[in-house]
Length: 320
Image 1 (tube, rainbow, N blue to C red):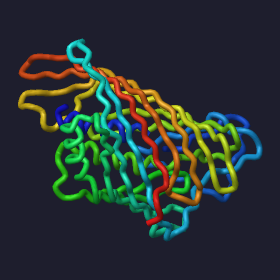
Image 2: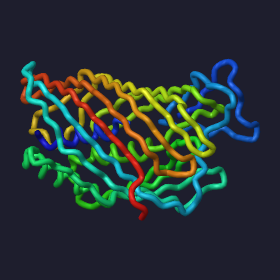
Image 3: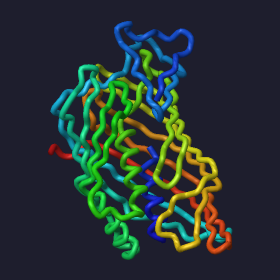
Image 4: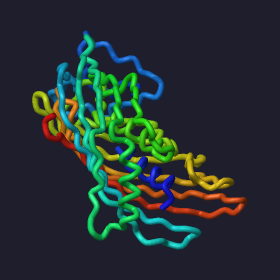
C-alpha cells in the first residue's frame, strides 16, 4: 500500500469517533444561575431530542486541578479495496495501541479544565501471519507521533477550546493526516452534553464537522443516557458519517497524479462509560465505511473503492 494511503487509512480510523439549541416541549430548564456557553465557529451542534424521565439534572464535567492519568487507545482496521471494478484481497492491519498521559494542571473559575495530553508510546501489535513489510512500514510511520503533545481547555459541557499541538520534529508529510486525526481524537474523547437537564432515556443529537487532514466529513451522532449515578454516566450512541465529493490531499503521489472523493458513507455505534470528575473515559466505537475515489494519472482515470471496518477502544491505563 502506498504510504500516502496508509496515512489516509490511519487518519480515517482515528477520526471514527456545538452550539446549543433549545430543547423540545416539556423539557425542564437548567438552573437560572448557569450561563450558556458562547458557541464558537466549528463547534459541534447539539440538539436535545428527548429530555428523558424525571428526575432530570444537567450533565456537567467537574474535574479537579492536578489530576493525572493514562489513556490507552486500541485501533483495529480491516479493509478491502477494488481497482477498476476488480476486487482485491481483504487486508487486516495489525492492531495499534497508543498510550498517552493526561494531566489537568489548571481549572478556570467557570469550571473549564486545561488538559495536556502527550503520546508516550505507540505499539504495533503484529501477529505472526502479518506481512512483515506492512508491519515495519506502520512502525516506522507511527513512531513519529511519539512525543506529540496536545493542550486544550475542556468546558463543563465537553466542548474543546483553544487547542494547541506541539509537533515532534521530523514528522513525515504523510503523517500530517494522522496528526489532525489525533487532534480530533483528543477533542472528542470527552462526551458533549446538552445544556438542558436530562434524565434516563434522554436523547440528543451531535453534528460535528471533522477534518481528517485528507478529507472533510460530517458526523451525526445520536446519544442516549442509559445510566447515571451521582457522578458517573453511561452513554450509548449511533453514528453516521457522510462526505461530499472533494479533492483528497495525498502527499507523495507521483507527479501529475490526483485523487478525488466521489462518495463516502459510514455508520457505527459505540458506548461511553465515564466519571464526570475525570478526563479518562472507558468506551469503544465501531464504524463501517465505504469510500469511492477516482485516481487520475497523466490524464488516465481509474476508479478505486475501499470498504473499511474500524474498531477503537479506549480505557484508563496504569497510574503515571
